[in-house]
Image (cartoon, rainbow over all chains, first blue to last red; front, side, top):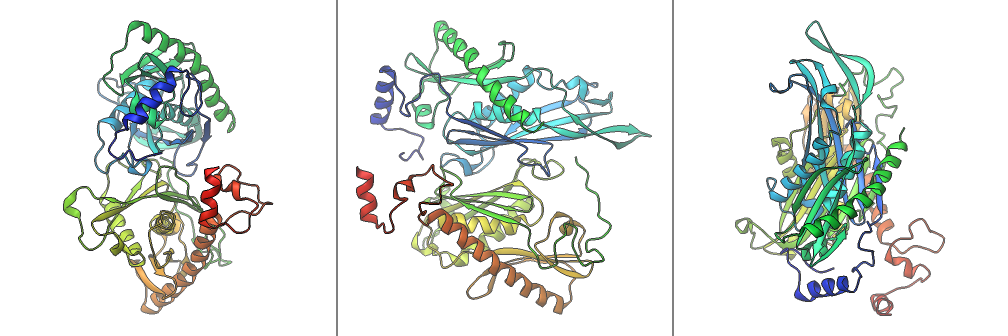
Length: 275
Length: 273
């Protein structure tokens, strides 16, 4: 498919992709609002992680794992636990990723997926308190892209949600100042689930689930976390500095509200497969 | 979380290990070649509950430049564990342990490679541990060696690797997590199969000289078995399928399902059509 190691794309490819779009077609033959095939496998790290999922979105794949630890609650929210999402752009996933500490794009990915989880209150952190001001569960969801062919955000959002929804962790209690296991296995207190849908803008055209080549051509992208009630819980405009009109944003919201139903269905099916 | 409980014994009165294996028995091993589309070469390994993916990029231009070797390619190995691959969440930043293991893996693989074919370039080997259940450095070498072969890096041989150890006074092959943690010792090793020379050798724990010699011989035998598994995995990925093997219909060599002899010229002709 060509060499993108310098994060550029030839004028010929750029024009070709753009011309095709204006004719109503995409380079891989999908419709503008069509996702690639999505495969979700949960519990892929059964022996060590409390929850995990492997997601394949076409040739993009990510693995997400959840660890539930016991720690001290933050002083400003003593009766709450913590959820946190991180991502690492491991160079295994693409010739474009380099070794070294997380760069802007890895941090953006983690923060966008984190907001989707946190702002939709996927995990009810109030329910994570073990003893107020002393002990609470800390839920860490970490994302590792394994193959990068575009749209890491949506793939990661699906993976993190599937991992959180299938997490099982041992119940702990404080007795005589010591932490002990009660012997019960708990599921996370899930309040609301929102999945992220990313719409890319190329010229005045909006497309879903970009492959890498399309990502190079896009003016910008708009990521929207949409919950089961079709409400928006988080947004991020990124992936380039191209501006977006209110009208286009409105169209993008239509696309997101339509597409998120299928994503929720895919996640639910994967969760059901282990119940 | 998921606190670990120390088993009462590592070798049962019947002479079997915690997971029911005999002392010289390996865990079930599954090797797959070509698991990543973006990488130039890749392989995955499941060894018991250990699950690792290795990806190779290169030979390619080396950044930063000051690492350049003028007479050979630089073999850069990056061994990383996922935060959720271990019982307590690992901190995301690379640890000293990960850095040392990256280095010993590079040293284990290097003797088999013709790196002098690519002066000034880099061959990157990225190893991601998804689930760690003992023997990750050895499993990583098994997978990385296959990934290098998949990337077409010229090599004398694949490098198989295994850990031998001691538990309850008994020498055992291919340590699991509990045997690693609660056993008396651990000797990870890797060999060049046809010369039986060792390219990786580390040891923790107390062994007599005789025990060590026996352990290394057991390791060599296990590595030879692993070498057969590695060759088999490469064959599965590269040898043309016969028509009655229909398990994997999604890749392009399907076009050649029925032909017995394909040389390069013929393959090109068919692609042109």
